[in-house]
Length: 192
Image (cartoon, rainbow, N blue to C red; front, side, top):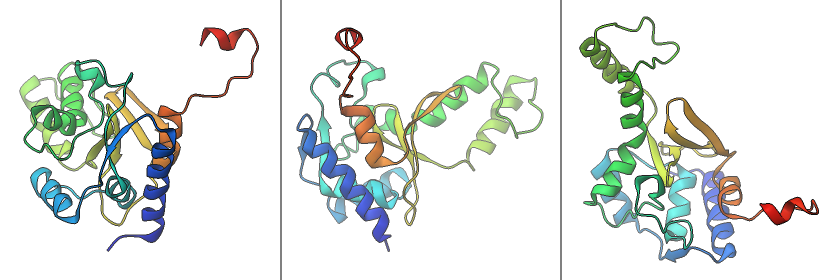
C-alpha cells in the first residue's frame, strides 16, 4: 500500500519536470514494470519515487546527458533492465563506498578499522549489507528505497566523502537540478 502524501509528492515532482519542457519523458512505468524492476534489483521504490516514475519515465535531457562518461549517466532507463550502465548506476553507492574503504576511508560508528585489507573489506561488506539501499534518480543523485516511505532528501553520491544533499525532497530536487535560477545581480549574472 502506498502513502497518499508520498504519491502526491512524486506527482508534483513529475509535474515540475514536465513543465520545464526540457526532458524527453516517455509514458510512465506500469505496475508490471515496477514488479520486474523491483524483483531484478531486490528493492522497492519509495512511494514518491514510484509515483514520479509512474507519471512519466524521463530518459534524456539534452545538454545534460550528452556526455558518454560515467559522470553523466543521466536518467536510469528502467525499461532496459539488462543494461550494464543501469546495473553500474544502481550499484554505484556501494561500489564507491567499497572503493573509498579500500583506500583507507572508514565510516564513523563502525568501530575500529582493521589494518589488514582483506579483513577490512570483509567487515565493510558485512556492515554495508545493513545500510539503506539507494536508488538512482538521475546521474549520481539517489533516493533511499522503501515502500511506505517518502520525502527523503535526494543525495548526490560521488564518493563517501563527496555526498551532498541536492534537494530537500524529490520535487525540490527537480527545481534544484533543472530549473535555471533567476539571477538578479547586475553584471555578475552575465558570467554564470
